[in-house]
Picture 1 (cartoon, rainbow, N blue to C red):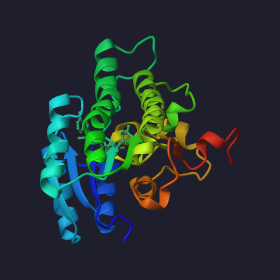
Picture 2 (tube, protein in one colour; picture 1 turned 90 degrees about the vertical axis):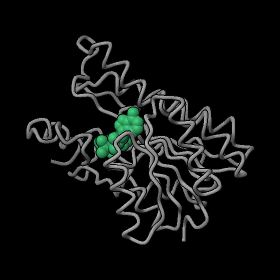
Picture 3 (cartoon, helix red, strand yellow; picture 1 turned 90 degrees about the horizontal axis):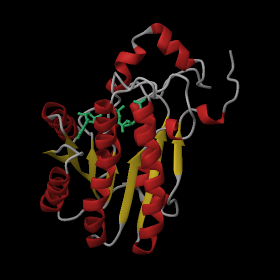
Picture 4 (cartoon, helix red, strand yellow; picture 1 turned 180 degrees about the vertical axis):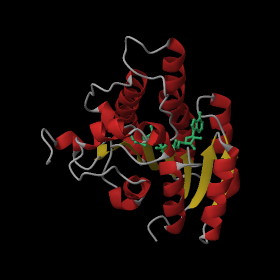
Length: 257
Ligand code: NAD
């Protein structure tokens, strides 16, 4: 099994990519710490893992709060004795996030606090646990919007993901000799609750779809499979990577009709 004897903590595991990853990691043999602000979603993920024969525990945490994240890491070590994989995946996409000219300060602050500071707290408190375990793998969820700009802007979200990408590279370099790898996962648009409102509008959906070479949005499982690879020892020499899983969006100039 690809994650046998590994303990993985996944933030934002109560929904979408995080939930799919929890299921996949557990199926691959990991003991999973499901971390989310949303208790109902988090507990549902644990039930789904257990129904499939896997092992998981839930810990509620707001990743923008240092004390919550510190406690979540402690809970992982208490529950399973160590931490090997840290998947900083929780994030939001605010409905009022738009052009730099219109986006309110409160939207900017909330987005940066969860999407960027949340990853900072995860690494600040998670890396010592990985060190105690003799090394490990960090996966930080950025986005393809950290790589290319869009006229359909979401300035706070894009800035937060650019920060995640840059921070991940620095962490990758600093801790590599301690057997700790850090990679930034950059998904293209994924059909999850995060984008549900945006993608329910046919015009906004088509505006995005036209730029995706395979002609479909990603599924959460497409991204979870990439996370599984980055979590496992199979990716042992992959460090500091911008790991793009976007169906070729960032490779495209013109996509097929
Ligand atoms: P989702 O909305 O389905 O799941 C996000 C989860 O994060 C939810 O369970 C939510 O409760 C949790 N969460 C939100 N704020 C939190 C907080 N402060 N503390 C703890 N948990 C919190 O979204 P998703 O699409 O699965 O997104 C997961 C990650 O992937 C995010 O970082 C997102 O930015 C990124 N991403 C998503 C897409 C996409 O198109 N869906 C594309 C690129 C990157």
